[in-house]
Image (cartoon, rainbow, N blue to C red; front, side, top):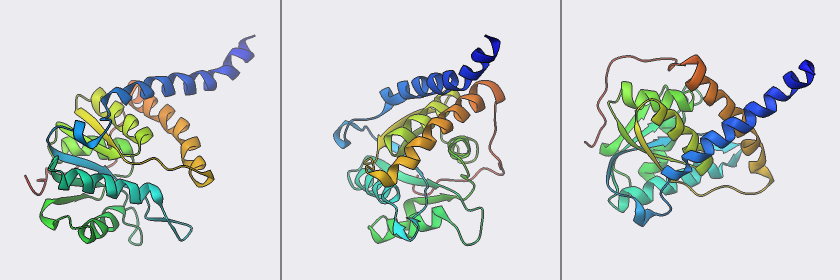
Length: 206
């Protein structure tokens, strides 16, 4: 009986973390018109391409933050992503493409140490001084980021980018269940901290 209970613990943890984080969907705005003014949007990074093909998660996030900016909903964009290797730089890729979409460079700030969602969210507060954020990513990702933020007393909301459908997206959605378990453990048990901190920095455009 004890062995059976232990075997069921992983499934219980997956269920609990999913339900807990899913509840933070209450902080997502349903459309552009519903978004009040924010100083800063936190744009969460992802890879520009997958196996040589354009990544729609990436494209839709850029579209969403561009809509926010030109609608006057945000003043500045903090782009946070992975730059663990010289040949891979999510923030720079996003910056280049946002410039092509007409976003002025003067409102863009890059965080190169956003190695995870937790890193991106906590660094937004501790390095860039932001206690109120509008997170921009797909709905599932926004909910996890908002959960992390609000458990660390950051007033976070989300503007969901368009979701990606089809077989190519299923791997991402499957991984999300484990990512939510990790988020729950990081926040509720381990009190995990960003991999890197450092000196405070200003957000351009404010």
